[in-house]
Image 1 (cartoon, rainbow, N blue to C red):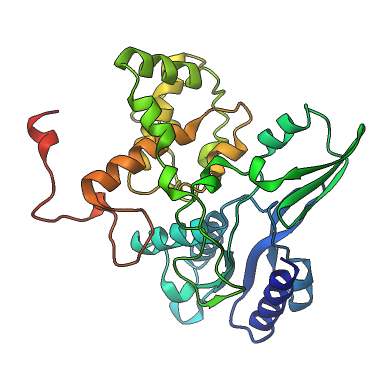
Image 2 (cartoon, helix red, strand yellow):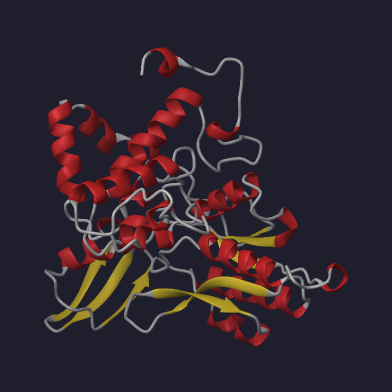
Length: 335
């Protein structure tokens, strides 16, 4: 991993020095142990801050979209001849590059607006799992070293196998290497375990209708509608979210459980053919809502009905934005 970090810093520094990009979106060491935070590098010398390890959790495509959207808005009142182009460099693993593919397909920005530094990924830490392994003890210090996580707590030092604390989305990841990139750092990562990608979904599908609804109610009852899932999702970029619209008002602002359920159901359906299973929504949820099971159900349906895996290829258009004569239309007659 050290060699990847070294090459990553060298490539980022070169891109900035040669002015091929205006900013690099990547990760730097956070202020807390075992936490890496997104960073925005504009000075070539600051490229030394970049890190790449199992502590890098967020899907950076979210920030690529935000930076380019804000820049585009800033140019609206500038004379056409004086407008400046902004190019964003990004450290992209498999899920982040899939989100970038979706952004390109949805015409959010152009391909020449982004330079993708591809990196292999062997998964990131699920901090809830890590906390469980430590019995809730506070992490005083720690480091990700190869296939182990070295942790120091008040009771002493411990070594935990990385595979035991990987995020659920990483365990069965089908695209842990970039699907699109301008340059690749390091060798491709070994495959994860995609054969068991839908095991959790199959278990829920095996339940009765009543059991499934009870499961949904139980999970949504945890939700406090902080909207962290929406804020971190790279596919949530509407300027005004439906939950904030007042004409008409789709969702109330009170604590009614049906408002929470409507918010989650509508957001999930907005993700049909657009969720890349990066796990960002689950990782930021403070209440531990199991959002992934529901999103993976939609992912499974999209693949089985349309043969589409979101963001896997620029040539494979999202199913809800494309039409083919052999589309299955059973829902029209059998809702």
